[in-house]
Image (cartoon, rainbow, N blue to C red; front, top):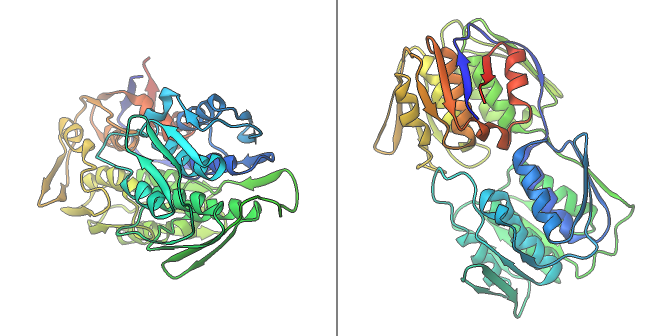
Length: 417
């Protein structure tokens, strides 16, 4: 898909934020822990969700998806995941922990996803080993039940995927498993909320998650198990950064949890934006002149790495040089060369992204991954002339109806083919 983006003057309007992509992928896999019907509301209609649905169907799930509501029945499930789609989405990694909890074994290709950097699943396998599973590092990956027992898992670094997979694996093991140094991102807590509805006891202390596993989910109070997916904080941040890059812009985003965006909003205020919060909406008025920043990106609750590329585009239009250091994925740099094609003064120095005020001109660029695609749309909307973005379909992997939402806000964007 090729996107055509013409120069845009400002951003105004109201949009509704969709359900969280990252949360939905994990929640869908979490449904495998129960044979009872699971209903997920507010599931975004995006490509990654369609792919994980097809993967689950390939192992026996009965799934109905209508109007952002997903109804899942997992009566009889295979532990063998043969679908080639596994290599296309990172979220398929959650099948490892979910199928180990459900079937006590799993056979699966190594999960894929956006290729912005190397993202191994070593911490996932480290946790599986400590819980007593036997890992055969073959292709496909095979993990089987060994002397399975609860344990204390100490992660050397925070990992959303490894934390969620460990919670899944521990959910079906008698005794208390403790995760030290877990990720406590909103998406992890959303998964915990669903699992609690399945009778799994989970408690969270400072830098710890404790899982009191059960061999059979027998205490579920009501059926079906119904859960509302949290709003997508990365989508929300993307549109707030889009509006902030244009002077004299006003935007309102609805269906959003501002507490999930605390440090994003702090940054936007430091750049000069005016913010008004309500319980489920955020209004932003952009500054006449965008200020610069020196920012370190780290694990939640710090500014999220998933918004780093998008912030990089926004800061091209600030008053002076900015510096970003991404300590989560320092090699998430696919956008740099593409932005340079538009005339951006952006470069890497000592593992820091240096961004200088730039005047952009149209060009032909290529989206390399999901967030790179959004970063290029923002930059192209500022460029003189008409910019073509190849592989624009990356946007559809993580943003629901992105073109209609951006058009509603005033972005001159269309699909060529």
